[in-house]
Amino acid sequence: MTNFHNYSLPNGVNLYVYPTDKFKTIVFSVYLQQNLRRDLATRTALVPFILERGTGSWPTSRELVKVLENLYGADIITEVFKRGERHVLQFLLEIVNPLFVPGEKDLERSGVEVLKEVLTNPVVEGNGFKESYVKREKELLKNNIEGLINDKVSYAVERCVQEMCKEEDYGVYRLGRVEDLEGITPDNLYKYYRELLDAGPMDIFVLGKVDPEKMAILMEETFNFPRQDSGEIEPTLVHKEIKEPRYVEEQMDVNQGKLTLGYRTNTTVKDEDYYALLFYHGILGAFPHSKLFHNVREKASLAYYASSRLEKNKGILLIASGIEIKNYNLALDIIQKQVESIKEGNITDYEFENTRVGLINQLKVSEDSPYYIISRHLDGIISGRLQTIPETIEKINKVTVEDVVRVAGKIQMDTIYFLRNKG
Image (cartoon, rainbow, N blue to C red; front, side, top):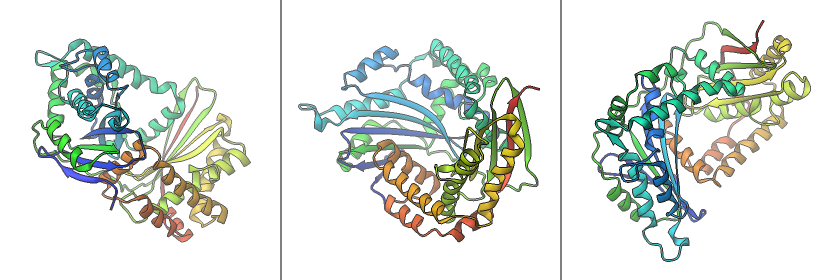
């Protein structure tokens, strides 16, 4: 069981309400899902930014901001991200709880109506979005996609994922591709948006000091637009046979090399071995006490940074490091030795117990943020594993060194990506 109250609205929207007196604001977060596809990603990424430009009632950003300011400084944030091979659009509204504003009774309703307006009533011209808005957002999206190269750390990790998953949907960048922008018009983008709004799986989260039953009535009254049955989100590809690791080298004008290693863990959040995989990740590179930080960065002084990251819905683990280009072979060798040492069971009590403490602390700290609480529950819905913090901690406390070694034995290197200087 979780602390969320679940409801299904008549139009197929899923509603999750988390009543808590821990925060003085109410957070409303709408998630609209689409399959992550190369031919859809750019359009999907454009949609939330177009909607944020204005609405039928408030057709400019300035007018929309003024409305939000009148709601005691409320704010709407849009985002687009990946969860496995799902492309997720987020529309988030945070308002002050009317319980803390004397004389205010309809603040929740006013805020929800603005959020619905942004989501369902965009500025249109003829049969499409407003042309000037589309043109401007296409320019901004192009700049954002191309601007990834300016952050070499993120760029190297993204390029490793793209090479590693070039034949899989997960290899699609969350913002899409520049070459797809030319074919996007106000009309065909609006048609796509209407189809997505009509049939894309939609989840709404509400978190704050609220009455769940009253909130369910308010959301049913407000989000009452007709929709078809939700479309299917295809399962994420997890298991893939690796015959031998691939090597990808890219040359740029850089002074520091970026070495990124991609591994298939063959384990996801859906599996019982997931908790042992969390330990593996923590022992390897998620914390300051981890092997990568201690042995590669501190002890051998071979990396400016060295850490691992885990994509729990895809079952991919990435090791990212910044190194002197001349130290490529030494750095690669010592990083691989850290991976092999866990497979061989070379895990100290210090590493194991500090990882346990670190994982539990992360969970407890997440309870202090409404955004993390909502995100964690969304992840649970997507993965099919809904658990409370105490239930997860109980699972973590049952993990043994033998469990970690077993999980380590399933991990395979897939791709070595090296960003280095020219020549």
